[in-house]
Length: 130
Image 1 (cartoon, rainbow, N blue to C red):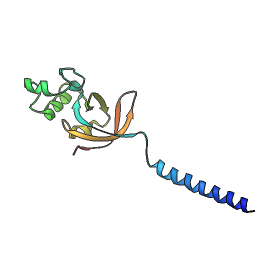
Image 2: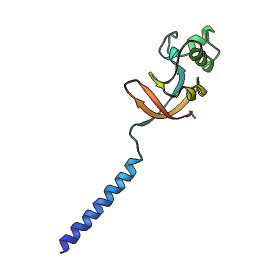
Image 3: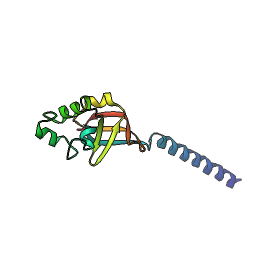
Image 4: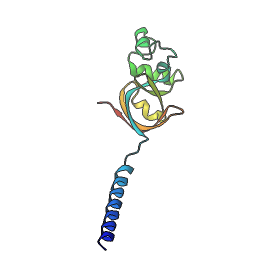
């Protein structure tokens, strides 16, 4: 009889342990990631008219603005670009173009999910990098 009670107690503890693991694990979505980078335009980021994947060469020439923000806004509004997130050598499309416009030319922290096929970030949260 004692072995049956020990077995039932062990099953109960195992159940409680598994329930606790599930409770904590379900809050962590492995598909959500946080990236830090700069909101740029696709024209500069993909070297359509920039030679160094940045606004620097365009600003030095005085072609598209006086700073990263004005260059980014010009290239999106007047040259057919889109807002993208540049993280080191990686370029991510942003699904939230309206939200990205607020951060044009700024360093940001973006939390979202990534569609690896299209390299598009589905933005859950975007904020200035501190």
